[in-house]
Image 1 (cartoon, rainbow, N blue to C red):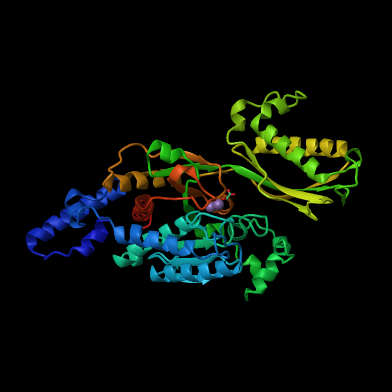
Image 2: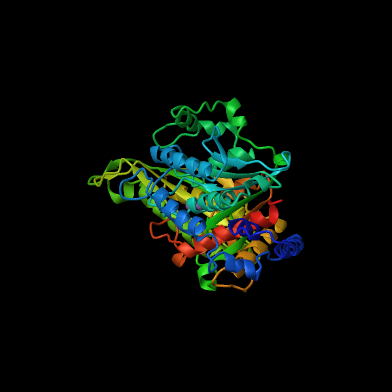
Length: 491
Ligand code: GLV
Ligand code: MN
Ligand code: MN
C-alpha cells in the first residue's frame, strides 16, 4: 500500500527529499522482507484521513454485490443455478468487472470465468483466488459473490496505482460456475473439473427435467465434449496456491467482535437421495392396517436421522461396535433433510413414491462414514418393517479439507497488518475457525494448497435473503486481500 500511495502523492525531487525517499524505500523493503507492516505513519497521512481505497474496496464492491444480487431467475427472490439464464447474465457482468480491473479473461468448458494478469517472471506458479457465482434458492447475495468481487476489487486497486505490471507471479481470479449443486445435486462442478477430480461421466448427470450437464453446456454454445472437458483441469505444477474469501455463514466472528477470520479446515460432506416406494392408493378406501405408505416411512426415516446426529453415542454404543469413538470426533456433526417430494402429490391419494435428500457433515471423515453406515443399516430395517422399498443414491461425497499452514499464516499476517491500519485499529489476534459449510476450496485442495478468509455476517445467517455483511467488513476483507497480494506477489 505504501508503494501505491507514493504514486498517488508525487513529490518534487529536491536532494533532501530524494535522500529521505531513498532511506524510506530501504526501510520499507527491509520491513517488507520481514513481513512487518510497511505503511508508515507519515504515509498514512497522505491517504487523507486513512481512507485506504474506500471507493474501490468498499463502495464499488458493495454496489457490485447488490447489482449481482439482483441477477436472478426468479422474480421475488435470488436464484442462480448452473447455466440458468440468470447465471449467464451474471457471468457477463463478472467478466466485464474483471476486464475493468485489467485482467485478461476467458471462460472454460465448464463455464468457470477466469481473469488473469501475468507476472514479470512468466514461468512463475500462479496464485489463484476465487469463489462461486451460483446461488441456492431464495439465497442471500453475499455467498460466493463476496469472494469474487473482493478479489476483483483488490486487483483493481493494483491496476489504478500502476502495480499490475509488477507482480512476481501471475494472479488469476476465478468465478466458479457451480458450488451449491442445486441444479444437478452434485456440488463443485466448476472447481472439481478444474482440480481434475470430476469424472467425465459427470457430463451425463441429469437435472429434474432430464437435461444433462453436457446438454446444458451445448445449448449455450459450449463445445464441452469429453476431450474439451479434460482441458478444464489445471496442472498442479503451474499453481502456487488457492485463496478464497467467503462470508462466514455462522456466528463465531460476530460473537468475537472481529470482522475477519482465517479458516483452519472445512467439514467433509455426503449428500444422498433416499427413494421410498410403497403402494399408491385411494385415501378414502384403503384401511390403515393394509397400507404401505411411503410418506409415513419417510417421516420415520427423517426423525431417525435427526436422532442419529443429535445423539450419535446412543446409537453407536448400541452394539458396542463403536465404543472407542471419542466424543470430540462428533465435532461439527450435522444432518439435514432439505428437500422432499412425493408422487403423485394429491391430498386424496396415498403416495406411491417419496424421495428426500440427506446432507451429512462432520469435521472427522471417519465419523461421517460411521454415521452414514448406521443410517443406511437402519433405513433398511425400518423399510422392511414398513414393507416399503427403499433405495439410497449417493450424490456427493467430499472429505474434510485442511488449510495449508503456510498460506494460513500469510493470510493471518495480512489480516493483522490490514486491520492495524483501519480506524478500528484492531490489535487482537486473528480468529482461526473451522467451516461447516462447503467451499470451492475443498475441491481446489486436490489441485493445490488452499487458504481461506471468512468475513463476519449478521447473526450468522446465510442461505437466506436475510444474509448480510456490513459494508465496512467488505472493505476489511478487500484490504486484507490487497495486503496479502502486496506481501506475497508484488515484486
Ligand atoms: C454450500 O454452501 C454448502 O455448504 O452447502
Ligand atoms: Mn452456499
Ligand atoms: Mn458459498
